[in-house]
Length: 312
Image (cartoon, rainbow, N blue to C red):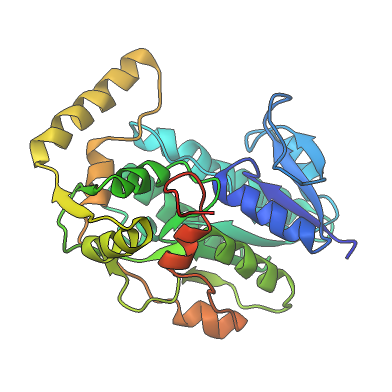
């Protein structure tokens, strides 16, 4: 294949997986990288455009002659709505401008989040829903697809890895209720879905959820059971008392404004973590692309290194 695929967020967890997968299939890659200090994903040979989503000239170079754009860049940490909107909404708007101004506008696949289903819960969720609405109202002239993945894990993950490491030691600290249910997906299944989409023409535009194929998702005891079997030790789920998270989350949001850092644990983030139902349905995307996820939790954890001695 000689067509260029333009990718934003290539240095992130999901972006790296997509880059490795597409390069292995001989797609030519053009990556938007923020600075000379940015490191290319492992085993990826690609053209690099230096700049950001706030640089119209860089975005023009990024999409010029591209067959498709895979937009993985996003902000997941912050203490205000603006912290998230500046990239998740405004950055997407600039990317859309560049795509629509191209001589031959490329297709666009954008990573949203299942959190966008409940935009009232957090600044992050609201920003992701606003990004989807931007596509729905201002991208009529291009072919686009927005994906809503649930919790994503796999090799290279840094967000869920500490949780699995703690579980491997015998306990899971649950921020909400043990009975809360959620879907999950292995990162390589997302990369495969992107590849399938690239290989299909005339795919209808829209917003689609996806998961690992387990209908009804998981609760915390389900995950503990899988980890217990893999690590060959009992694993117990423990609900964290509300105050133990509420107080640091409140302080974190306020201190971040004074000290100038982007927090992960905030009151809004707790709203997401404590939501009782993050189960989704992947029937629509599976039917649309004839795609099926290949990896459920047990096999995915076996393929994820660095958390338990049984992982490979």
